[in-house]
Amino acid sequence: MYKVADHVTRCIESLQNQDIDKNQYEIICINDGSPDNCQEVVENLQKKYSNIVLINQVNQGVSMARNNGIDIAKAKYILPIDPDDYVVPNSLGRIASLVQTNNYQVFYLGFEIFDANQKSIWKTNYTKQENKTFNGVEGYFEARGFEVKDPDRSWAIVYDRQLLNDYKIDYPKNVPYLEDGLFLAKVFAVATSVGFDNQIFYQRTTRKGSATNSKLFFSEKAINGFILAINDIKNFAANNNLVRTQQQLVNHVVAKFVLLPMSPFINKLDFFGYLKIIRLLKSNGVNKIEADGVRQPYKKLSFSFNFNKVWFFINYIYFIKFSKS
Image (cartoon, rainbow, N blue to C red; front, top):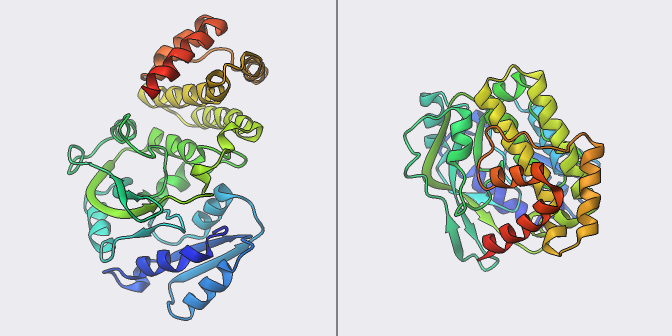
């Protein structure tokens, strides 16, 4: 929680308005040094509900807040919820039953996005994926596509906590943009059972000032974060005995983190800024993208990047233009 005091009550009350006993689940709230009265709001709710756990910490960012929450979690499964969102009432019982019956390690939940006026603007459609079980690599790509919103989210997904513990999967520190994407890459590289639920559970709100609406992506901090992400996922792969298909997923994610920080400079036709990124990547050992397993559109861009950096700059301009048309 950070500067979301006006939204926290709605979120927690929606999580309390469920069809399973309160002693069967806990709601862990991380107050990440919020300057508003988030702490007071949750403390008042604790007087009403016994299953709320509150952690107050100095500001460390969303990744460390989530890691600290996972560290103290007691349940078999975890489900990240953003504090300015909420969930459908009386739905956790059905979800818990499906996860346990099918022994899913990862379970995608349906979600709906609302604008600032609470008008529905998009919702998931898992009709094709429902009632099927995928391995991690299959599940990763089943949840993606050009029409999909927030493919790199980690909220609205149930995770087996044992999987996270066994592979020491956590959120990366100092990766301010797409930290969820890095977390998901690790999860899906090693998961063996992934499911999808087509019923809407999670209610996503968009608001001015939220992290996904900020200009953080274009900052030097974000670019350095992409470099950290590349090293992080490579180290994860090196420390685990991945089969080829799993390594191919890692290659795909690495390609994405190599290519994405260049887009704002190429979009602005800033060739000198682009060269700065190239030099930064090279100084961190990234002069070539391992294209085995990388899927489109990153595969074509990876070949172009490996062939010639000037040609890549030109090729990426056409890619950005095409993706906006």
